[in-house]
Image 1 (cartoon, chains in turn cyan, brown, orange, red):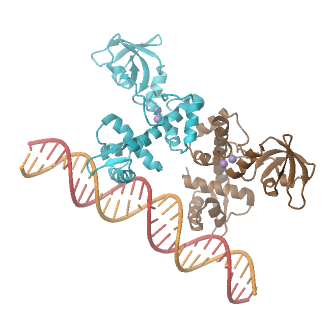
Image 2: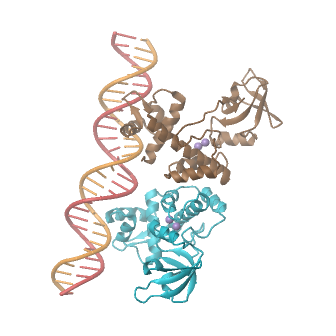
Image 3: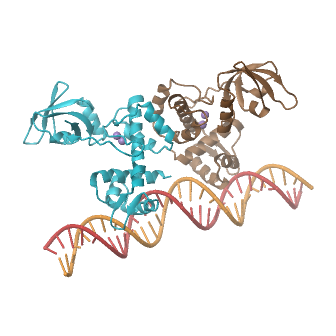
Length: 217
Length: 217
DNA sequence: CATTATTTTTAGACTTGTCTAAAAATTAAT
DNA sequence: ATTAATTTTTAGACAAGTCTAAAAATAATG
Ligand SMILES: [Mn+2]
Ligand SMILES: [Mn+2]
Ligand SMILES: [Mn+2]
Ligand SMILES: [Mn+2]
């Protein structure tokens, strides 16, 4: 079994690995967990003894197969709880993360399997992120950033890159929700802003917005 | 805010107070939490500084109004989660306690209010224990032990005194569930065992069983 | 390649919550 | 009312997890 702190480190490393591919640096983990590098070094040694990461001094850290599965299971719980909060308890997608951060540490295999069933075995969380299965496998679909689309191209909104409350509430305000079709009517060379059509409405969005929205062609 | 450990102490004191009425002794708390008296003394000082208990050396401890409300809220969460697990996730009443012990510490007022609504504002948990309201008030009904009934008296099963898995599974085996009517056909002077009728079935139960079942006349 | 600059690790300290062993206070028994 | 037994508190230690400051290793730069 793993402590709450160990689980948070595992999850952080898991997410960093999915971006970087290489060994994850002490500093990267420290930044992601808002802690100090020295604390990370201590914890990483402990995780190494528990066989969930490979660690050589000054070389960064990599998850073992066991570590990856363990981390994926925490992410699975986090995302299933997020679905529950949105679908059953009327939370909005910008309110769920903080609570899911707590719920993901509840230890009960039966609880999470039954929750999965109750929710109809969802494949994605409210932010469009895939839910790992019991074995830790993730079905990562081929989503791309809206900012990569050209004029007259279109796609369906399937996820967010930034899931901060601020960004999510902005999307709510603009009525941009997952599942909707977006058509790029214009692309400004000057600032890379887009003039798009969604739900019959036309609006322009900045490059920053467009590079935090995932779509699928 | 309170730590997980502080919350567990508060809850233990709360439950002990509902039985004893007087100041709760260090040893009683230690036994209830399976810890050592010295640890209790340390924690009790901390709780006293946080204004949730009144404490004078060697005099035991009492919850303040604030402490009582805080503790009741933890019990509220515990029992609401138990209802959820049984009603929505197909847990049986002997499986829920351990998981509820974890879930009761999740901090989110919205979560618990929405859960309450989802469940239809239940008044009792799967073991027949009352669920405190948001202000910490409990609606304690006048239940009595089955063992206090005399021959030819009857009542409806409304709760258990012992909620250990062993006892609950025994009740399952004998098809004794909350809400059913029990008629006392005989009472043996020799060993105080009862010969009862429930759901048309006749069976005899020991004094020990009868003094762990609450009924309402 | 030699010297900065940066990253990472170590050393030592602190907090929370726990424990054992010993001292002090309270309660029970002669 | 002493003495004995029990309960409670104190004193000191330990593990987990964190921090600061300093040392060591690695990376970057001229
Ligand atoms: Mn989240
Ligand atoms: Mn999410
Ligand atoms: Mn319970
Ligand atoms: Mn219960």
